[in-house]
Length: 155
Figure 1 (tube, one colour):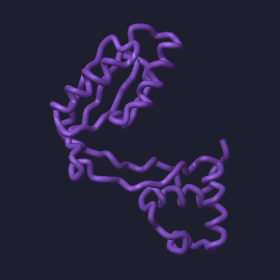
Figure 2 (cartoon, rainbow, N blue to C red; figure 1 turned 180 degrees about the horizontal axis):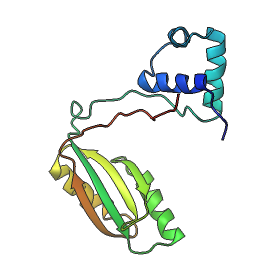
Figure 3 (cartoon, helix red, strand yellow; figure 1 turned 135 degrees about the horizontal axis):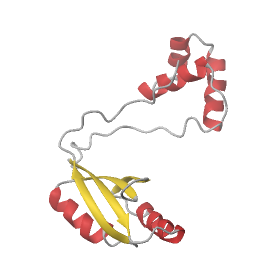
């Protein structure tokens, strides 16, 4: 892994807080010449520290008021079973995140849907129909306490 200096970390922190900041504004905030900032920015992208940009949308305004986490246990824990499940997950647009975990189950899935009726359909028609799914446990979120924290970069 490439070492990041303090300036690189400050650039990354500022971009996490405001991804729409212009190069000129960011250079001014950090006390760097715009050319130097541009070179550093390009290097951070090229080296994979910056993976993309996008807008954060309000899911409630868009009709996705229900946030659900689902524990998934597969019937087999073989490389083929993991790969078949992962491929199915990648094809399901309702699944926002899926993480293979260690512990009492195999995967943790994050999804956002309109309501519990929509979740019930998703569970039956999408999730339980995926290859190898043996068991699920559902956790509906009552309150989102924190969901936009930046990575804690050491400055």
